Image (cartoon, rainbow, N blue to C red):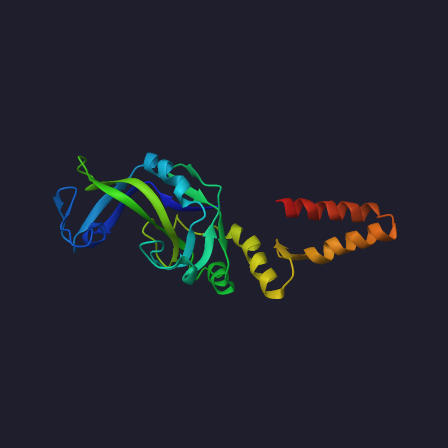
Length: 220
């Protein structure tokens, strides 16, 4: 799992806060070229966490959905279902579906993440920030060169091995698991087990242990 959003104070250009055709946000006149501080409370991330399940991952930002672009034309991956919030960070599993994007992440060419979401900006009574973000609802997750939340919100490379396995399996038209630098051809593994059962052969204790180890890896 990787962190995709954090609570705290983030900076936005006024133009990013304004609805098209409007000049005010919650009654406050906003200068499109000025930088404003927006506070994202942890409780708002917790409330909106479920909306970041199974959303598109894009290469740089592209608004998707009914009021945006067709996700399938821009999608390079998808978030998973096991979302949770810890220490102010929202974590989700990531799965990338393109060979090129996986290589960019593995080579640290592009690995920061930027969540894009609907929300309501509310005028702040705190002098440390201008607005508070409420009612957060996820739209997409972008892989970017530099994210607003900083380098703490990025792809954790421990996720990439299994994702790359999915890409390799698609390209080679076979199921290959790559873990800790080793590749296991799952088709071959299960075929060998089936042959041994059909031939009525006794499996050597070492082979049993090795196959159990492989099953443990697969379950992980």
